[in-house]
Image 1 (cartoon, rainbow, N blue to C red):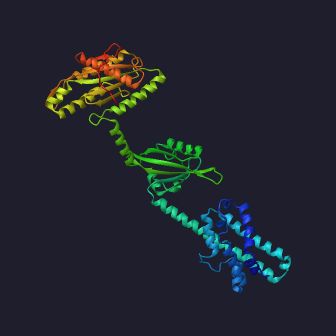
Image 2: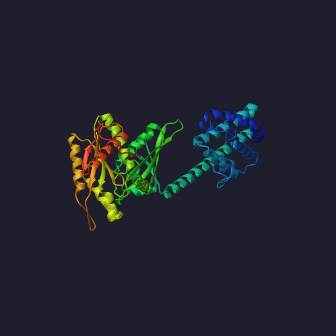
Image 3: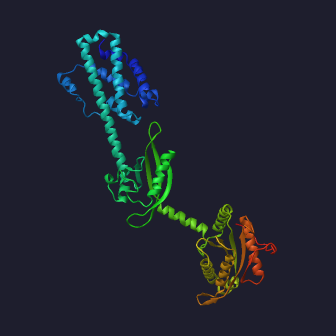
Amino acid sequence: MRLSAFILNNIEEIIKEWEVFAKTFLPEAQNIDKEQLRDHLDEILRTIAADLARPETVHEQIEKSKGQSLTPNRDDTAATIHGAYRRLLGFSLNSMVAEYRALRASVIRLWLEENPERLSSVIYFGDLIRFNEAIDQSITEAALSYSTEREHDSRMFETIMTSCHDLISSFDLEGRFLYANKALTELLGLTLDKLVGKNHFDLDVPVAAELKGLIEQTIRNKKPVCEELPYTPGSGTEEWYEYIFTPVLGNEGNIEAVACIGRKVTERKASEDNNWYKANYDELTGLPNRSLFFNRLEEYITQFERAGRPLALLFIDLDLFKEVNDRFGHETGDSLLQKAAERIHSCVRQSDTAARLGGDEFTVILLNLPKPEQVEIVVEKIRQRLAEPFQIDQHTVQISASIGVALYPQDASIVDQLVHHADVAMYASKKAGGNQFIVFSPHLTQTSGRQLGR
């Protein structure tokens, strides 16, 4: 039986034997189904059989012996399509070539098993030569298709990366650049060839240490890492970027590289910061509001409890504010609150917190005072500054302040209780005539009836 007829009569047996090879020796074949594995092999074998059965001219024999394709521009042959599909399934070029070599071996072995004496026949030996040429031709077509697909994907990738405004890059395991797209090279003012092989420290990036830490964290945990960091380009305007570092894993789960996308989030961050500011700061005075005050006080007490350090809480109420507001109007009253807030803030250190709870009520948290008597020095300074006349437009306004003081931990060890005791001391100061401060003590009346809900 001629080889062409043998192939057509034994296609299923040939493919089954080939499947055993693929499942045994090709890693890419382990995770695909039978239909995908057999992809186009039936048609490839039928094409080869048809070629063997067709008479061949001398010119065709010469061209094939040189490895020249008789259909050089065809992109729709079974081998060409097979190559493209194999690449989509993740097969390497070597694995795809190995498929054809195994197919060649299966056909020849099965054919010779049927009649080992065939090789002694010139006719059958000629079939074998033409079969090998046909296999080689299929390999060439598949490999060219594979390369064409890769080149196409490479061009598509580069086009996408070039047109993308995000900063896209990849790094080796030492944190050196392997790739950077146009947006990143332009931002850094370097061409890609000047960038590859350098790290962020080589480029004097201000947040180089932070970026290096993110790359190392990605490698260490084998998980994506996201962080927002600032960058100031040559224009001098600070921009914020959200960086997402992702591990590039090999077939065995080992990290081969780290990919990164940096997206500009300056406007979003400014909006978030603005919203956070509005939620935590008093719109009129610019001081921390009730929410931020309680948050900070809770944080400080937690910290100071572990360290065994004291703090002082001042509760301040402006005397005669209602009279000024009623007499001169709300605009004058608002200006008075602003100026009073400025004076209170000027009396404390940057590490302390002056806040407005609402209306004409203010609080101050004093931290890290080495001696208890220093609390009274600060409180007296605030009282004197608020008792000085205020010049608001054409009006000279005179007010004072009633101030209550509570100490942590001696007067209270929890936030709400400490605030309540400072309020009780302030209320006692106001009942005593105002323009003074009183430090909380247990014998003070606690019948103020005031609710200081958060």
